[in-house]
Amino acid sequence: MDENKRNAVLTELTFSLAAARALHLAAQGLLQPRRRKARQQDVLAAIRQMGVLQIDTIHVVARSPYLVLHSRLGDYPQVWLEQLLEQGALFEYWAHEACFVPIEDYGLYRHRMTDPAAMGWKYSESWISEHRADVDAVLAHIRSNGPTRSSDFERSDGQSGGWWGWKPEKRSLEVLFTAGELMIARRHNFQRIYDLAERVLPGWDDSRTPTMEQTRRTLVLQAVKALGLARASWISDYFRTKPPRLDPEQLVAEGALLRAWVKGWDEPVYIHPEYHALASQAAAGALAPTLCALLSPFDPVVWDRRRALELFDFDYRLECYTPAEKRRYGYFTLPILRRGALVGRVDAKAHRREGVFELKSLVLEEQTRVSERLVRDVAGAIQRSANWHGCPRVDVTLAEPPAFGDALRAALAQPAQQEAA
Image 1 (tube, one colour):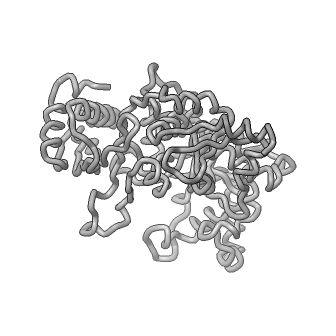
Image 2: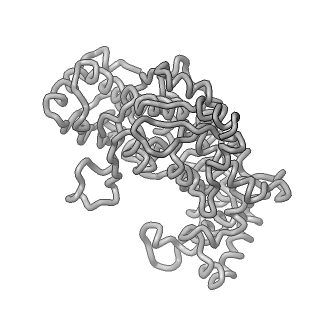
């Protein structure tokens, strides 16, 4: 082994599992509570830090993108997200899934737009070929009439239902969106408003598109940075990159990534060089996770279920697609992050008209030790979320273990807790 490689091995960091979690949470903006009130630019900064913000429309509580931001920023006006989209600071496209993405990363997704047939169910070549005239008519309508919603077209096929029952114009809008011919100009009541790409992003020129090799490299580096530290098997899921994939060891050899280790794991993890100082703090036990928050099911911390299990020992499954009688935890369970650990999950529902935040089910992980501090932390996180939802009264229907539920109800009933922000 030459001297340079020997020195590199000697300086590789080793983390305890707790330190690895702390580094991951720090990279995700979830290490400690914010010390100042959020501003609109903090929303953009948080999305840039994560790389993407996944979109989902379920709203038994606030929709997922708003929840993800609240976990990191605390109270903020939800309209800021739509304003950033309309201002052109963000765009929407298929990244991890449908996501808000910083506009400066638009070029990283052009290869997907110019080869939409590789996007699977998100694009239908047969629909385009069989309905070319209808697709062209939708495009001509937008060119003549300006930004358009799916609801601007009346249903004429007599069908209804979910995505599988989209009306023809909606399917045409979506294939044109996936192909990059349309972009989302803005949203109204969370409904997409489509417009021509050249009107939404008038300065774009495809000559600015990075090569496929540059794109793969950049997305690997961005994924590792967003994760704080990453096993090789975690990297491709973050931006849903497809083979051929770049071996992170190649980037280590080039000095573009750092190699490190987690005690008890046989394979290395990788760290972005910009996080070397932060990683050194974590390895030394100097990063103290103190944030307590409810996470969205589509938060980057848990959207890769295998990673959540490997890193947090948290076996998580979203059950909204599971028949009600087969659900273990509830329809839309929110993981509970508490001081560097995922300690439980809560199935909540915001009754906005009544001002009630209902905890239909709250279940702690078996390994979670119940203490007064735990109760206080979890009660605080729940109350802050309830207040932000405009539902200051919290009703606990079911909690396990029962003794924890009793203590939680008592904590939430205290006036000081109800006023928590």
